[in-house]
Length: 306
Image (cartoon, rainbow, N blue to C red; front, top):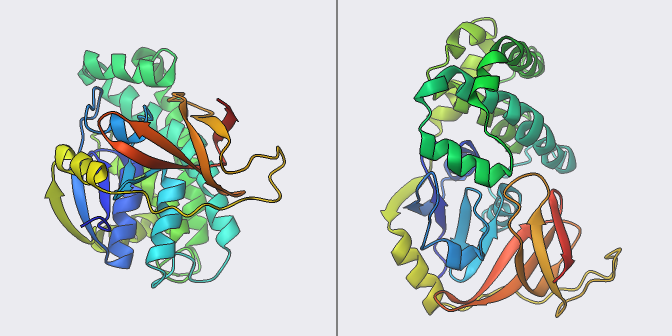
């Protein structure tokens, strides 16, 4: 079934949890292709062209990299219930720059600083390759008091927003909740004593429990090899689309490389099929996967001539 939603993910991934929660909010049926927490990922790399951050969504031979484009595609395909129950879509998208960067880095430091010598050597080496910098668990451990302070400050923002008695940040479960929930879920999923911090914030705890109770939609398992075969036997369905306002004059047919601007800076090269202020989709040919179109966001990614 070329239209089925396939999520390449691993259970512990906080960014994957964002998408799994959206599956729950929208009651979406999806296929789960579980990948390793660390490289190699031999069935996934032919699809992405080397992009190695998690998660990746696949629909036939269209490959969606980064939660921004995954969320946009899910909202377009499954508009009810909306991720924007009170409007404010622009602000909801922008919240990711808080949750995915400063809040996430604070949470990562708190989690791995607390785990300390329990972090496997292979994981540390993999994350150093991903980040292009030292994954310094000892420094994270030393910074735990400051990380607790920062984590508490983030929790206070959420508690303040819920202080009028609302159940959800924007009237009904939506993207604002998904963004804010990710790091709370990640912290609670690890043995770092976060319950002591959460005790001060009963509204955050109750809100996170409500989101968890929504579940993850209708999940069924498949192997990453099966997903690769689906892409190989399918054809991309992305229609060409120009962006007349592109500030650099890019257009379909141009060859570019697309790279994250923070970490996991693996360039993926191909021919532009579609682009806008929000996304860029490029066509690639792979010996194993065949012809695929790989979709990226514009915010947080750099597109340069290939």
